[in-house]
Amino acid sequence: MELAVEEIIARCHAALAEHTPLLAVRDVLDELVSDPVSLEQSLGAVETGGITTLHCSEDLTVLQVAWTPGISLYPHEHRMWAAIGMYSGQEDNRYFHRIPGGLEPSGGRELRAGEVLLLGDDAIHSVANSRRDFAVALHVYGGDFFSVEGSEWDKETHEERPRDFERTRRLFEEANARWSSQR
Ligand SMILES: [Fe+2]
Image 1 (cartoon, rainbow, N blue to C red):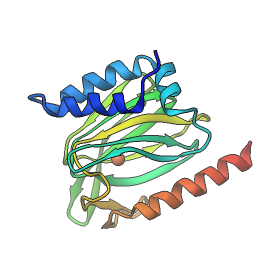
Image 2: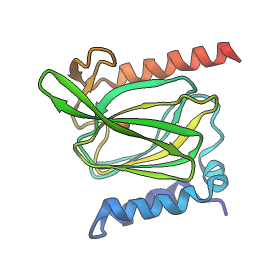
Image 3: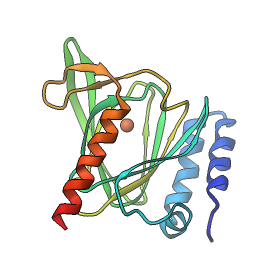
Image 4: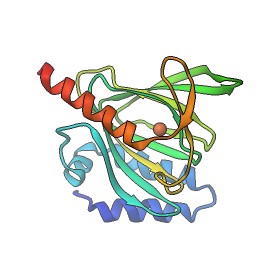
């Protein structure tokens, strides 16, 4: 059954009122990603990589994120909990800890279609799509994703700098250009 985007947002909103919002959001995403055909009908087929904002308010942000094949986003933090529901392709997540002067790797997880990943509000991660199809997910955050200040780190040197969404946008643009020239 096709779901309206408003219905997806309403379900996430309702989860915020539960005792443990992050776990309630996980349940919502578990159900949504179990039916990727309906999600794709609701959100549209992905033809290019990027971040689409479905909802953004003070206590909730819902994004559709489509990682372009070959893209690799440097380590960053959100400073709020996050739940990622993968419904097509695969995201390669690496985790990091802060150490004096930089970051220390602390494992990772390959997130496949049909799976949900939870991140605490102190998580630092990087994301890559190493496959040759788009990696598409619903990302739900417990706050205003674009307004809360945070850090990102250079991929090579791990030098810390303020989060810069314009830089992220350019990274997608470059990855999209590379991918379309390869096909
Ligand atoms: Fe992230």
